[in-house]
Length: 446
Image (cartoon, rainbow, N blue to C red):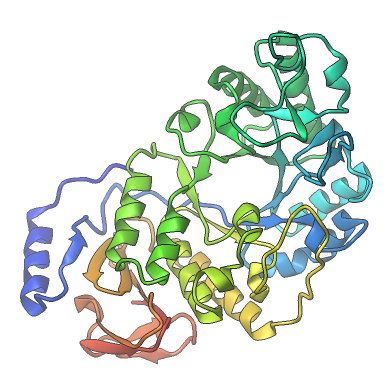
C-alpha cells in the first residue's frame, strides 16, 4: 500500500480536530476521499474444517450447510486438506498426504467434492483447497521414486529439517520429475473438480522458483484462480500469490484485548503489515485459525464472547480479507484439535451467529466506502478507524478493546448528523462523546 502525501486542506482539517480535542489526535494522518482510490476487492474466507461438520461423509455435510455459510457473507470457502491421508508413522494430521489426487475416504468421493463446488458456485461462492507442497506421508508412492525426497548422508529419506514433523517426509524440489508431478496434481483439482484455487500450506518452505512456475501454469488453466499463502515473506507476492497471512496481527490483537497495550499498537501492526503489499495484493486478517484454535478458542483468547466479537469486528473492518474459521461463528469456547472429529452444534448459540451475520452484512455493504486508506485516531483503549470515499460517504468503526467502560470522542463529521447504526439499522445523531460498555462497538455510516 502506498500512502500519498497530505494535502494542505487535510493538514488544516487535522489541526482543527486537534484544537477541538487535544486528547484525541489522529495517530496516522492519511488522505481520505483520494481521487485515485480503487474498489475494495477483498474476499471473505471461510475455513471449513471437515471434522467439525460430521464424523463421516464430511464433504456432503459441508454441502448441506452452504446456505448457512453464504449467510455469513462468504466469498471463498477454504477446505482444509481433503486428500487421502497416510498411515505409516501417522498421528492423524490431515496435512500428511498419501495421494495428492484422491479424496480421503472418510470425507467422501470426488463426486461429492464436485457437488460441493457446483452448489457453492450456484450460490455465488468459490472453493479453494488446502495444498501441502512441502512434504508427503511416509507411505506416499512418491517415496519409491529415487530422488523425489530429501535424504541424509546415508541416503535415508528425512522429515522436514527444523521441525518436529516426524509423520511426514520432506520433498526434494531439486528433482524435475517431482516438480512436474506436483504441478500436475494441483492442475488435477482445477480441471477435474472445478476448484477455484489453493491455500498453500507453509509456502515459505517451498522454493520460490517452483511457485513462480506452478502458479503461472495454474493461471493458464484459470485466469481468476485464487492463491492464498501461509507465510509472511515479501517474495510470496513476487512469485504470484495474491493474498498472504497478516501473520503478526492476531498476536497483537490478543495482547491488546488482554490488557497489554492500547489500540494504537493495533494500527502500528496494521501499517507494518500493509507497508510492503503491492498494488492489487492484500493480506488475510483473522482472530483464529485451525492452528491457533487447537491451542485456545477465541473466547479464551479475547476475554469471553463479547471480547471475541469485538476482536472480530476490529480485524474484519480493517483493510484485507477477513477469515472466519468454522466454529467461531457459534462462539465455541474450547480448544479444537483438527486431528480428530469434533462435530459442532451449529444452532447452539443462535444470537451469536446472528450477530456474526450482521457484522458481515455491515462489512459487505460498506465496501464502497472502504476504498481509501482508513484514518486512525489515538483514543487509548478504543480502536477507532474512519473511512471516506470520493463521494463524501463516510464510515466510522469504534471498538472498546477492554473489559471496562469507556468514553470515545466521535469523529467531527459525525457529530450532530444523522447517521445509520449498521448493527441496529437505526438512525442516530451522535453527540461529541459516546459512552461505551466493556467490549462494545459501533459501526456507523454517514
